[in-house]
Image (cartoon, rainbow, N blue to C red; front, side):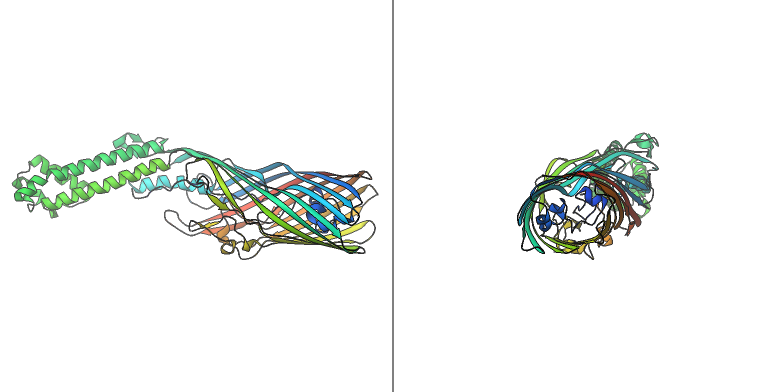
Length: 536
């Protein structure tokens, strides 16, 4: 028995699961869900997408209330051998995903407020755990079998749920320099909130070890390892005592007498027979040893059993029930600048958001795995981004739009760890993340407008970035919906977006105690949204 079980661990999970970058959400209105190219918006969601264009609104007050219902399924498959399952599924649900905007336009000026989940916004539940959880349990039978304790099965109970939401509150001011050019300045206050709750408990195995009464039935792993530790401890003490009993013979000059002739040195024959049997049972050759050498062999074997006893005691602790209940909180400030150009039927919007350097702080109630030290600070930056969009009125009824977001991920730090230390993103990314959207709107009548669009996101992470809890995938999304003018001052938006993820894999090389294996990651997401715009 030379393998020590690893400490069962939970890792930090990433929840930027919707449209946007690795940590940003850009699905911030029902209008976006029905047509995902809003960076040149002249509507009320311009508070977020194109704040410099708010000066194009009519004078007065304007409000936009939006909510999205988002569901996602995460699927992780693994080739790691001897697991009870090779596919693990997690579900993310965000039934409430609000975006609230207000603006007041007067003359050349516009003032605005906005509130939205700028990052995260969902909870991921893995009812059967993850490969990284089960791998550490799956190795127990092989380790025990290699240690001459036949074991073929294991079982356990596990669940992990992570929640993450970064709420943003922003204020802005826009000014029309002339009929073509307008500019804006704003600030967003971001509140970071993460929570992690999970457990791994009731680990069971089926060892066969008659000396302790274990006959291949499923039993508690911690109890078995505790019993085995005691058994080995007793064996260590017995061997040490046996070796100590030879000291008087050695002191009397009998240390050079061969073990098989121990009676000549005054050792009772029964004890000589026991000494020969003990050395043989431990894998030694008593015919090549004298009494002094036999004593050293026994004392060395005693030390070995003591080490194994401590190892099994550690295994008992490591297979005991583990639980995590931890929260993380922090905040950051994001300056925002914008420019809008209105050129006849063409409108162009530009926006730049500065980086927010953030460290969230752990608030830990239970941490049996040592992953969330209370009061520790964890990097959780929001990178700078540039957003550009264009909207063109082909006819009075038909409009086409395009939009681009580019996230400067490599200059930020997301809390990724390599060699047990946090690293900058450029260590785990080749390229920055970007997304591009295209959309079309057609006014069927004065009251009814239909729309559709396509959104492409492209991740730039290296293979080493990907884990079962935190991975980034490229996507293709299709969207459709409508806008209905209930009155001249009240409009209803409805949209649906289906997101298809591009599967990615990571090859894990062999690293004791684990063999080489492959993990594959995939997801699907469906979003529905409704919003109401009110002006007066």
